[in-house]
Length: 164
Image (cartoon, rainbow, N blue to C red; front, side, top):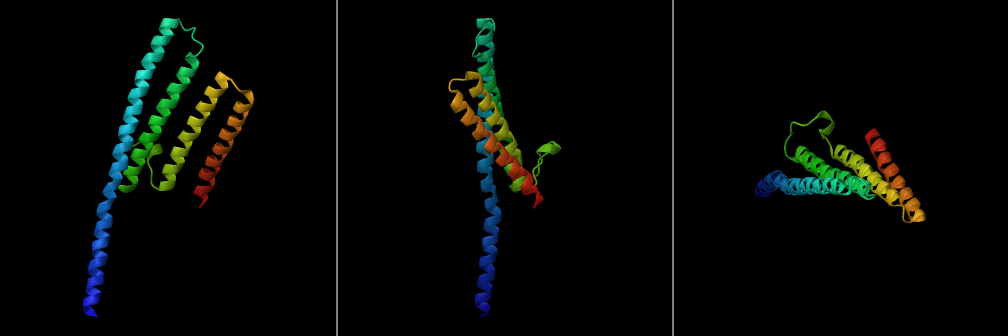
């Protein structure tokens, strides 16, 4: 009986240590997100130079220039989402980081709220791109309704999730 109890305690301790050490697996998500964020920021920078060059060459008369600017905002917002996700995962599972107060993440719900806010912005920009292109009015209406429904759902999740 005493030997079984020692085996259980040893096994329990072994499991606990394994779980504690496995938190470093989160570093895979953090590093991958930072790499993707960096790539998106660099792509956005290159695209910015391309858009500016296109404006200069066309003397600002390119009608699609506005859409290109909206796409730039979209790229940078997605890069920001990846960055916030990486910082949030690191703060939640590894250690604290010196960040602005609005970016400090204490719970997984905090991370979801911050990501939801940026997702709503990205959806708004994508809708604005569709609105500027205006190829299919009925499709644009349905797309706008879809964006609104998802946005309201994310806002409700944020609002009611904090009350718990």
